[in-house]
Image (cartoon, rainbow, N blue to C red; front, side, top):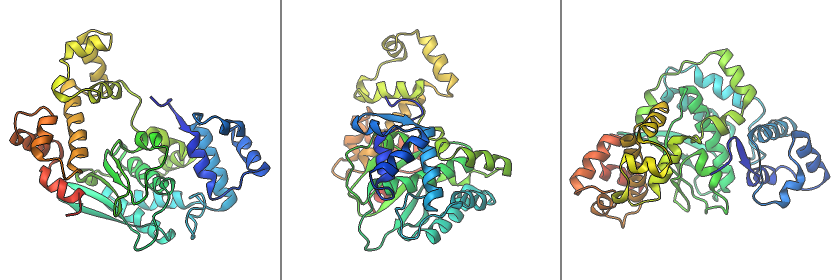
Amino acid sequence: MLEKDTISLHMVREALLQCCAPGAATDELLNKVGISPQLFAQAQSRVPASAYARLWRLLARRLDDEFFGMDPRRLRSGSLGFLCRSSMAQPTLAAGLESGLSFLSLMLEGFQAGLVRQQSLAQIVLDEGDAAAQRPFTYFTFWMIVHGVACWLAGRRIPILAIELRCAAPDYCEDYKVMFSENLRFDRHRTRMIFAADCLELPIKRTEEELTRFLARAPANILVKYRDPESFVSRTKHELRALPAEQWPETEALAQTLCMSASTLRRRLAQEGQTYQGLKDSVRKELAIVWLAEPEVSFADIAARLGFADTSSFYKAFRKWSGSNPGHYRSLILGL
């Protein structure tokens, strides 16, 4: 379990890679934002998200670039503010995303992004042409900005169904999985983020005062507030993922595993707006999405793995969860 409100030192190292050479000047910069250079000798070290945010803001001022020097055109200081202000003037998240992606496509040379809606699924796709794949941190920084701003515009977390990237998987992925989704796919032929299309209809109702507060805390608020919470719900889902679906315990048995009564379990879940059945459906949906991306796994196999009596029952449940049938989702995710 990752520590609450912290960022791996791997992220700090990646942030410095293209904009700061190792040495006394970089050590001075790190000390200034409250990150000890000695931590780099400890591979598992973590730093407060607030310190990482101070590093981002300081580098943005010194480089006049809010993208860590990772694009030839630079994302000049003030770009995040302009992105938010122009997007919040739109009526819905769909319009806000289209406005924001257009702006980022103008500002960044390597990130020409567009919003595509296909029935119940939506995706943000990068058109990279024949260019070489970027390094993972570069892609994830772009997704952090896009997804973080989208969540702020909507006033809630936008669940990500999958993120696909053209690059190879990095040695370290844990923070990325917590921030975005467990369903990260590498070495794909294109880079995109996939989410439920019904999120696009969410209204945008943000004020200048809210924008000022958001920008004052960025990007720490993006890194922490809109990542998957370190919650009782997350703990319960972790217990379910560790077992085959046919072995999932009933409420009383799960409560005993978690060292509490069944009534306490129900109350704790209710406090986070969840039920045990709802969590089981959520985990089944997450697992189904992972297996639907593997063409060699048949619908019948997925249904069996998820504990359904037959394929028809799986189809009905998946349509209920996502508004899309499994065949349509697989064709979209595989680009067929």
